[in-house]
Image (cartoon, rainbow, N blue to C red; front, side):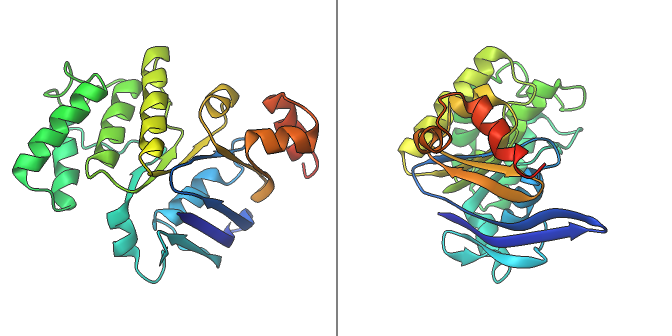
Length: 240
């Protein structure tokens, strides 16, 4: 389980997060939905131990992210907003490097890379250097790199960015399969179609605050609408 309790973060005069609290449970896909600049990426970076919060607390699998960040990093797989691939390594080498950092042995890594290359349809780019990859190709490699060690907690920032329709659908199916096996999946997006087709729980964020949260059915009942876009606009309009 992932827990955020009263998270706050300020960059100069900008309050990126203002007391954000929510839970993402094992076996569920939880979506952070909000406009650009809402604080989604900042929240994910705190949860993944890249940033330290100015206030509040975050836990991954019961481990405080500030008290034991190394233990947290061992249990998470993170897809950041920027892929950050090593351009002079091939796709497979990028994945292998991260697997080795997680302590995976050569035989286990070979099998896992083969599995990921097939699952993400990367056969044609596996042995190509990452320099010159398209956005979609970079996203696939970064996703494989994040999941190479089969983590319990999966944090994804705009995971379908740059993917074509078929690749995005395959990714959604894969994430649903991971959740069905007990993984905790937390993703951010501003794409309504992606969220509505994927999540079990929804956290709507605007101006650094959680303005609504719950299952899609619960939010439909709360806002008396079955239109997610209308629910989103109504929720954020109260504070914008």
